[in-house]
Image (cartoon, rainbow, N blue to C red):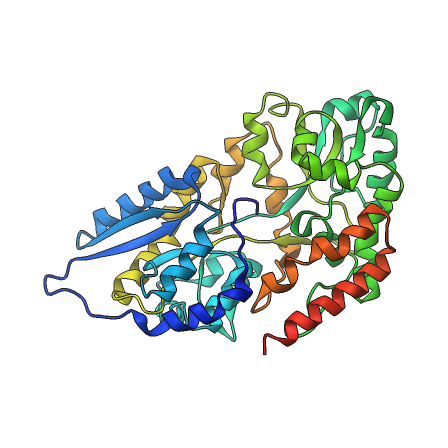
Length: 419
């Protein structure tokens, strides 16, 4: 999801290891404690404060201090704080970084919390909860989640006399519609086909029966024929001229092109809904449906989790707060803001109804075949190379199969260093 900061995790492993044993201590004599809770999205701060207020009302001996850290600084600051032994008690975690923190003993194991019934993993989408499990131990409690849908411009579809996309659409339907929608003389293209992972080629890779990384996390799937088929769906659209060029989408972000009425279809996330709803050009003129089917149906699921620092001075209280953050009460508060889809099963209805002009139910309808966002112990070491290695296939400078095999080699080298 686009509100999630990224980091260069390969350069901070040593720092993480240094910080593991730097924090510790017991509870004060009067039983009152203060916990720090670090987040990065200011748009979610009001909801997070409501959740904190609700928790504190029921736990007067536990005070929660929210630390809002800008997304560009979040991971760098967290690494520095961990190195210095001052990591926050509780903080947001995302999939690409979960295994690195867990494998370096930086996260509090939640096995006892789950066994006690304080938290039930069955309350969350299974594929989402799996992202925050490492070597059989759960470290994160899902907070929110996102999937990807096919957004479309109703005005452009009406002008081209094309029926709106629905759950019967396939890859071929998309390609046909993209050709009819494209009018290069007017600067209008049928679809945006940028080399994005979660929103684009990860989904089609899984729909083609391929994989980004092996189930054991030890080898790349980029050199598999099915994976290459999933990549080729996008490079074929580029070759057909029904998408803006790679340079155009670099100069102007694809969502901006879609919002300006220059793109007929856009594979976008549930996180785009609130932005589109706030834009006069897309508030009522676009809609969304489930992703078209490839060889099979699939969609990548990702989302944040709340985690606790392994060396927090107050593990009992931190665990109590984590359990509340993962509760239905907390999810209901999140849903009412419309900013995110809460992870707690059955609480997403308020989010769906918050923007009734869109068929937001589409993002929930895909949970039955959702696939976890691909990660490894040091995700960023290879994921940060995807655009560079695969980009030439999108620009037409390299055959997609060649680029895919180069990406597999790059990825396997990075994975080999994780052992």
